[in-house]
Amino acid sequence: MNNNGLITLEQFIVDQESQYPDAKGALSKIFRAIELASKIVNRDVRKAGLVDILGSQGETNIQGEEQKKLDVIANNIFISAFSRSGEVCAVISEEEDEIHHLPKTENEKYIIAMDPLDGSSNIDVNASIGTIFSVYKRKSKSGTPTLDDCLQAGNQQVAAGYVIYGSSTMLIYTTGNGVNGFTLDDGIQEFCLSHRNIKTPEDGNFFSVNEGNLSDFPEGIVDYISYCKEKDKATNRPYSARYIGSMIADLHRNILKGGIFIYPPTTKAPNGKLRLMYECNPMSFVVEQAGGKAHTGECPVMDVETTALHQRVPVFVGSKNMVDKALAMHHATDKKS
Ligand code: AHM
Ligand code: MG
Image (cartoon, rainbow, N blue to C red; front, side, top):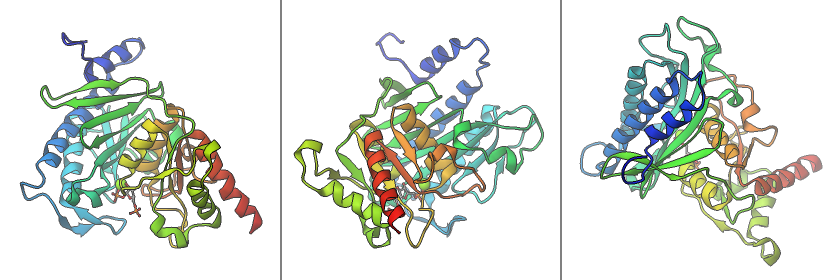
């Protein structure tokens, strides 16, 4: 704690690591890299309207999505921070087709999966966007990490979290021992502990789903959305709809206030839209560590076998009772058909 009673992220991580005598400080170095990179991205996001970094890069990523200039800038900032950390041998990024091998790979034991700037359709309209990250230990001991080193299930994550560039900038993370949130104090440019041991309510009042796709949703999801809108005092319905098209912003609200976020399978996209390694797994780790639930409709998100870097999965994530109800209604119609 510093003299003003603030606990900085750096201090918090050092304190946590000191509880584990075998910890060698590797995670501290990785978090220092994430912290630095997110401060730089935050600076760029804050002045984006003033300099020529809004708009499209003029290229598409491997998923055929338009890359924004800030997507590419954020990707480069994070890669260079990880490369200097001395702990990371490879990065899987939404913005890169293949594994990004970092120059030195002899002793570096960690692999990062990240979406450097999620919700990029919101960049040009000044709505909340974020960075999502997931940390894995490589399986092999040394040498250039292979695809097999990278394709690990979410339940192997060592740490995960996100940074939200919203009305304030926050970094939220877990190492499997609860979830803590830090708000960037602009004056001193430090992330300071603001949300200790975050617990998500078991029930909530918000549902977040892109209803524009309703005609492509499975019957059970359509039923669940109708259920969310029905009047029923006893269960606090109707729930409020909240969907901005930025998973981090929608889930961050639901984690703190209670709610469900759904990106279901659709007739056009049977595996949904969101990517397992750098969107669904890290957000699921955070939500489950906060007491919530994350499921694909077939199994817990973090138990999905990872078979490709840019694999997609449907996702039902948020307050436990809401996710259970949505899954029950989804499965009820599965059985009918
Ligand atoms: P992105 O990584 O290209 O920004 O796409 C992911 C985003 C999520 O943040 C959000 O939940 C989803 O796409 C919104 O998709 P849609 O516009 O189909 O509702
Ligand atoms: Mg994304």
